[in-house]
Amino acid sequence: MKALDIIALVLVIIGGLNWGLVGVFDYNLVDAIFGAYSAISGIIYTVVGLAALWTISTLFRTAAGKPVEAPAAKPFERVQAAERQRETVPPSEPGSRR
Image 1 (cartoon, one colour):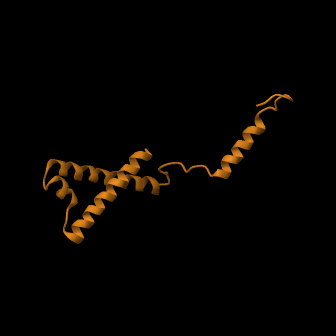
Image 2: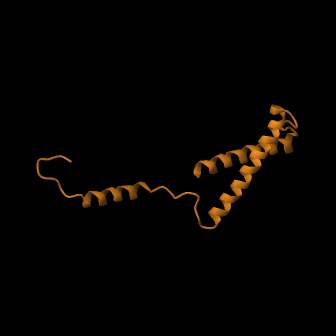
Image 3: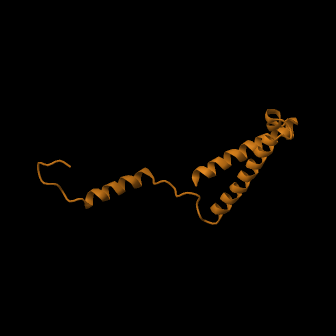
């Protein structure tokens, strides 16, 4: 679900920037592009609102101790895992290659 989290976050940021334009310059970019009160503007506002709700759920999932995604292994840990795997493989016969 990481992709959905990123998409929702980007939509929320875009919506926040649009509201910033409305607040500071009294300029609504969505209405300027798609027309005020158009069906497309309504769809865009709805999608951004749904993205905001999804982002809220991400906040609660993270706050509850359930990370949104497992952290990636650190490079040192990958090296240790590779060394442990090599130790479990039986040595090959002399003169043969692995």
